[in-house]
Structures are given as structure tokens and as C-alpha cells.
Length: 212
Ligand code: NYM
Ligand code: MG
Image (cartoon, rainbow, N blue to C red; front, side, top):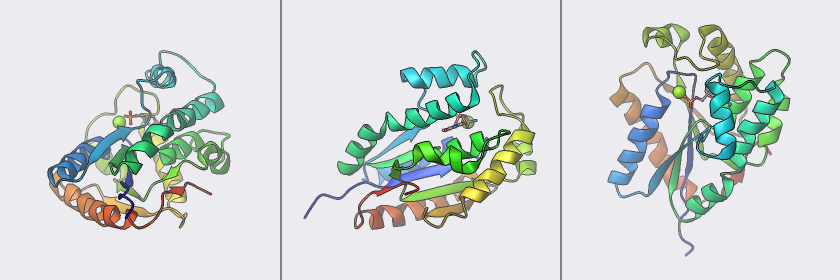
């Protein structure tokens, strides 16, 4: 029998929904239960492309909007060989943001349509599960001030949320909406349940291609 592949699990949501915390807790829980798992994040700021993106987000440089969109996508593509290798080796990848953030954030800018924004990411490894951490703008505001980075304003985040809602209508993607207003531990429990189911079923189906 061929060895079992890992699952590709993505967490999405607006800023402050708790994605990073939950990714870390999920990886830890999977590892502790003897399942190989690693965390990844996008943008991955350590590469040459990632450094350009990072300084853009920190407002240290300006980039034309289409250009930065394509750099975010390129930053995913440059990690595809590594992702595929890990998945084939049986490691489950827990990913903090993916192509959905790419499409939602750029299409929230004036003059961009969702369809154009999705194109560069067509054919990326398709997540076996995308969990959307749902948090209302009011609840997000209770979690304190936004940071200093580009896009971190409540007006822009509301536009991003609407784009995510459009993306979630696509039945070719396995979306699960998670109520992120619950306690960290209860959100973690929900996420773990969905992830364990996905890890079991991913072993029986080949890795797909996104938006194809
Ligand atoms: N972002 C993230 C995009 O605009 N496009 C993308 O493709 C991705 C992956 O970068 N505000 C935005 C969303 C976030 C920011 O922040 C990355 P963080 O805190 O590193 O996840
Ligand atoms: Mg963040």
C-alpha cells in the first residue's frame, strides 16, 4: 500500500480572528497525538519575494497594486515544491492564510474584480479543508486596536470580509465556517475535530488543484 499523504489544511479570516494562535495550537495537538504536522504561513516573509512583500506591508516601500498581488501569488508558488514534498511524506500542513486571502484582499481594492484576482493562483495545491474564522467587525474591535501595517483598518477589513463571503460560495472548495467569537479552547476544539476528519479522508483521495 502506498504511504499515506498528509492533509493540506488552511485557516482564513480577517485580521485579529485568531488564525495564528489557532494554527500553532492545532499543529501542537496533532504532533502530540503522533500525527506529523507542520505550520506554514503566507506571506512567507523570509524569501526574496517575501521580503519585498513584508516591506510593502510595513509601508517601507510602495508597489503598484497588480504587482504586489502577483508577488503574493509568486510567494505561494515558490513554496509549492516544498509543500508537495511534505504532503507526500505524510506531513499534514497547517497554513495561516493562502490564495483566499490573496483574492479577498486585492479585490477589496478599487478597480479589481475577484475573477482576475483568483487567476494567478489557479492550479495551486488545493486545500483539503479551509476553515474560515468568522468574527464580526464589532467583536474584532473589542480585541483592541489594529496594528500599523497596510490594510489594518476596519473599513478595509469589512470590504475584505465581503470578498471572503463571495469566495465561500464556491462549492469546489471545502469551506468550514468556525465561530471565532468563542474562547480560544473552544475554537481549538472545533478546529481539531474538523482537522482530524480531514486528515483521515485526505489519505483516500489525491491532492487536488485549486480553482480548476
Ligand atoms: N495578504 C496576505 C494579502 O494582501 N495577500 C495575500 O495573498 C496574503 C497571503 O497580508 N493583512 C495580507 C493580509 C494581511 C497581511 O498579515 C499579512 P499577517 O499578519 O502576516 O498574516
Ligand atoms: Mg496577522
